Image 1 (spheres, rainbow, N blue to C red):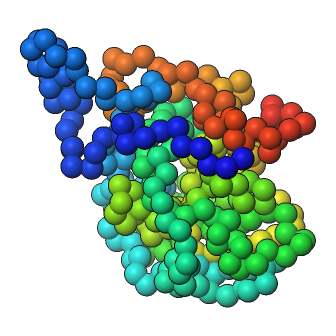
Image 2: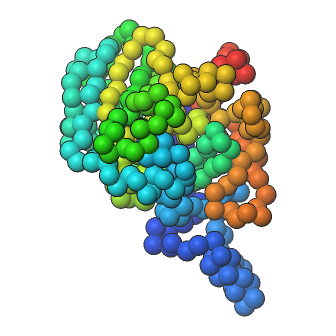
Image 3: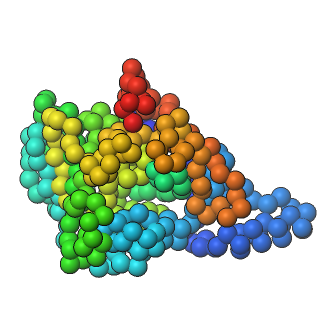
Length: 298
């Protein structure tokens, strides 16, 4: 059940290499013409993603519904100071500053696949710590079965919340065993630098085997609860967005197939890639759902 990294720095573009896809292909072609093998740009059949791609193609509706809107508008978000209110079934409830939260945490790089419910994907090198470290710090009580999360709601800084795209503030939730799994992290950065605002600064959830909307951004509240918490997209359309929302190529979205995905940065003529069960993390997380009908618990 522990974290087993299967992606390396070879699967993402080095931070300094902000080349567009045309430049990369031109360089590779030049090497081939010179009689040398072109460098491997990716492993495991994954295309690399630059920081430019990661930070300019986002869903963060609080800043607009267009993919480039977060990069244009998120500069308005104030991320310092920042605090998270932790409550519910915990031994040490309270409002924790970022310094409090980070104290004693083991921050590491995790290179994860990222799969959107819209059937596109990336590979992202996150920096963060396992959520279980934070939950252990606050002390989970015996009656807790779920973890609920809430995003900041700031109409003066988030122009997207002026429109009822979904019910604000954005909320999400995990079953406790999902939250405690070592793959589940609280991400505070990308490429070794602080989290960009458009990607969920200063701290966000990352659950790599679930569709991206489960990985809630800019968290201000965490609650340990007994009952399954409401989640934003499930409230908006329960038929299309189940509570679990595990990546599953065998269960289609009602309006499109989930069997394949479009890899961001691969180019307009690139073939779609087959989607992996649990986004490629099946060996580590399938046991969490033993005996469950995943077409019913989608």
